Structures are given as C-alpha cells and as structure tokens.
Length: 311
Image 1: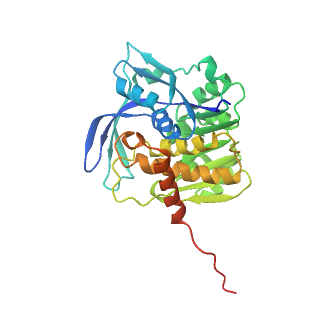
Image 2 (image 1 turned 90 degrees about the vertical axis):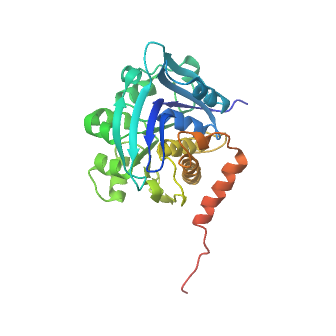
Image 3 (image 1 turned 30 degrees about the vertical axis):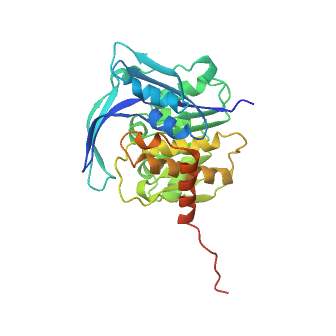
C-alpha cells in the first residue's frame, strides 16, 4: 500500500544569520526547506521551490537523505538563490531584517510535476497568496490543505489572501498576524473572525509561549513550548512546527479530527523545539523515531496533572 504524499510549496533560501552569540553567513533556510526536513520524519514529502546556481549541493543531498522528493525543486543556472540577512536581538524573539535579495524567487511561478498533483495533502508555505491559489488550482482534489501567511500579504494582498483562505482546512499564523487579519485585539475573537474567512481550523503560533488551536468544532487547545536553556537560532521554528503538524496529519490512518489535531500540535512543537537548538536545519538532521518520541513524551509531561475536586 502506497503512503499518502504531502506536497509543500514555498521558499528555499540562503540566510545570513546573526545572533547575540554567533553568526553564520551561509545558512540554508527557506520555509519549504524547514517544513520538509521536519515533516520528513512523519510522512512522505514532495517539495516545490526554486533556487539558483549558488545553492549548495549538500543541501539538496540532505533533503534527499531525509526522503524528501526534490523533483519539484527548480534550479535556475543563470540566477542566484533567494537570500535573507537578519539579526536577532538579545531576547531571541525579535529580529531585524538587514537585507533581502529575492533573486530567482522574485519570478517564481510554481509548476507542480504531474505526479505531485494527485497528492492527498498540500501545504502552501509563506508565498504570495496569488501563487498559493495557482498551486491549489493545479492539485486534483487534496484531502487536506494547510496554509501559512505573513503580515506583508495581509497588508498588500488582502483580497488575494482572503480568496485562497476559502480553500484552506488549516491556517497557521502568529498572534500579531491574526490580530491584523481579523481587526480584533482579543486573540479568541481574532481566531473566530479568521475562521469566518474560510479556514476550518486556525493555529496561532506564539513563539516561546507555545501555540493555540481553534478547531472546526469550536474547541480550543493550547500546546506548550518546551523551556530551553539555550536557543541557538529561531529561524525556521514556525515552518518546522508546520512540518511536524502537517506531517502527523498526513500519516496513513490519521483522521483530521479534534484528537488528531491536538496530537499534531504537539508533534509540531516537538519539531520546532529541535529546530531552534541549531543553526539552519542542523538539528533536524539525523533524528530518529526514538528521539522524536522521547521529546513528544517530554511535552506530554509538561501539562500532565491529576484532576482534583474541592468537593
């Protein structure tokens, strides 16, 4: 029996990362990269993206080694890879963008290989909403569609974003973006307003404070973040979360209902916690099922308590 496939479409990049304690000028990143590395431990991933001639061969080899199908990765020989330079502040939550060079990503027009189009699961990572709609139109009939966005698209492509949201089962965004998209400051009201735009389930990422799930049944679930003594590089944490989340839901036999969505939230948090322990996807390499499951159990213990009654 063939396992279902999970297609991700997004950026593949080279980052220059500066933190209060270290710096890496050539750090492979991009939303599709982090998503794929995280999700690959849980499901069969197919990546769609674009890079230039300067993209390192070892990164493609690393993706392949993790079982990621990179036949949808376009390599433009007469162009350069999307590059981003950012500096993190002392708290490792806030960052300043120093440089952005879109390069080949500026004219990226995703074209899914024929064998990708029948995949059951699709994640539209953070790219222009119009492109996200184009990708969705190329799919035959995905069983579950996830989408990520950012404040830029909410500001400059709001109508296009709202159009694609009508086709989405799970939307992931951070709390600031949820407030901006909804016009509501209260996070519960914001989630309700965002769900009214189309997504059946909304996941609001809150960085070191974890993540909140507002599901199709109106239930709320809070997933904790793992308290870590040393955060090396937060880049890609949200994309790794999405990879763990969607990766679990794309496993054979998993139904996208309330219980499995909650489990997916924890696997998302697990993969994000690994990601921030190293630069780039360093800590997402060489994992095994046992290490992932141990950390899953660690997360479970964070909120494990005996119920008590005053009567």
